[in-house]
Amino acid sequence: MNDNNDISVRFAEPDDLDAMAEVYAESFDDFQPRLSIEQYLRPQGTWALIAWGCADGGERPAGYVLSRTAADEAEIFSIGVALAFRRRGVGTALLTAMAEIARLRGAHSVFLEVGIDNRAARALYSKEGYEIIGHRPDYYRNAGGERVTALVLRKCLENTENRESS
Image 1 (cartoon, one colour):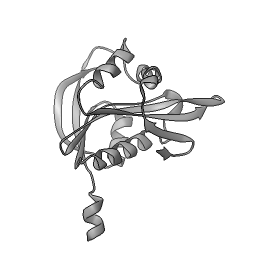
Image 2 (cartoon, one colour):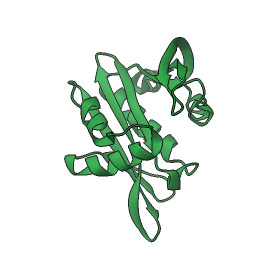
Image 3 (tube, helix red, strand yellow):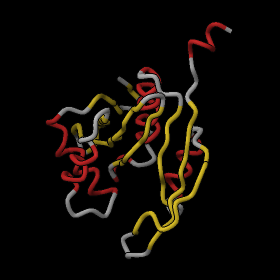
């Protein structure tokens, strides 16, 4: 689906759950990463993308994004990038592929939440055109047990049909 400096992105399959759980465990403080992913994927309209990349002489899971499309909106439930692949374009590749699929499925915008203290993710989202539209106080709990505000972000998706007819 997408190739970016040895990174490929495709729809995740059931056999990819363990690989996504491995990346999830590196990205979040959760003692049951596979169960968390399975729960995210239960609601109707949810889907996942997985990124693979070359590292340590072989192909490894590089990242994932868990999403849902409902009516004309899409939501990112979770996105994670493996430690060995950070700052190599994996997050960008996942966000780009996810937005294109959401647009093709009729979404006009994508929403997500991010911890106010997650500077790396906030920088990525800003670079990719996401804007802050709200705050959710005490939404997350960090590894130290402290409550953290979530920022609610939105990206408006370009409608290529309207652009091409202009």
